[in-house]
Image 1 (spheres, rainbow, N blue to C red):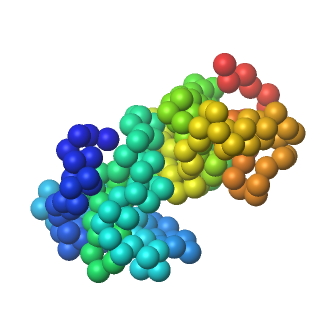
Image 2 (image 1 turned 60 degrees about the vertical axis):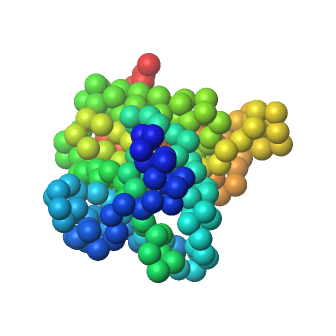
Length: 220
């Protein structure tokens, strides 16, 4: 994330308001909010805007910029992880303005039912996914909810999204011990959808291979 954006967040400067964007269509909705495809009314640039409902208790700007999802975006800067461009807080509603991608990996897989991925495409998707995860883990974060719906694609670029479940861990703390134990146990061991990233990423790559290729394929 650029220094300008970090300073904007730290100083509480929001720049453009939500009225500076035209909401084009709803891309997704969930219990705590929804995601819009939106266009900047001045530049015409297209973004994805995540709207968080009022019941999140966003009583102050200081609290908003320290939300887990926002903090994770602030700490991570990788070409294969979604970028947070701006924060907007109006009337106790928080909006996360992010880059907009073409579709989810799930949608891409569904669209390619009749046009199988070739070996190079499978390699490219898996490589970008693993590189992003390696960076997250090196930085001290685990995604914990990795699935095709949370992986976004535009042309040949793959990006990990939806960092609301991501967690920062200490290599010497209890959290790191818990995650390490989870890695060493059977892959089915875990806590619902909050499974270890290594297992999830392997399953995602395998889904592409199994669903489209229906044959064994070496990703290395």
